[in-house]
Length: 261
Image: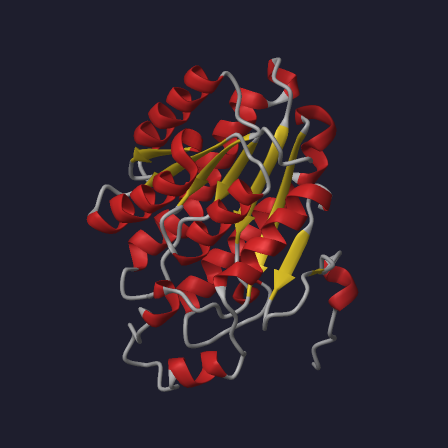
């Protein structure tokens, strides 16, 4: 998809990776980016900074994306005002297992709500023109990371949800892809702390061992996956390297390990 002159919604657009994605989209000529984020001083500051540079190509829709009614209301406002939505970036998330229920709601439930809403409103089977959904997962959605079991499992869920929607593309015309950032220098990473007293590992140490990168590397990968990614694609952006796609594990039966009697 050519980003130029398109309309996008991004959840968590005022966060570290989110703000970097917004800037890259604007630099690539997007017509409008609608920020869906919580109504707080940080969100307002990021929005005002963006608006100073990019004017009315950025709009703020304060809302809690874990709340289905709020998400739907603001989504429909964007659709009514701009007549279309081409891109949905389900990017909102938190990194600390301390807030277990909120993490599940934000990292996974909001992704499902947003994706199904986009397909309902823009799917070709409903008379729409299709589009693309980019779900932010994590490299921890592709492996086990015992220090953050809840976070890890929510990101596995996002990867699986994304791949499951691949086969519906011919019906909906909506490409659904996922980006899996590695450790990225954002407030989300710095806020990670041990939530469960039975976890003995040093979380920060183990995360540092995975390498790190600036948010702009993830933003560049998001631009590229919008432009070139195929439906169901899962891409990795880590350690300041070029992004790459990863295969599905396929049929679990191929991974069979006999159990001794």
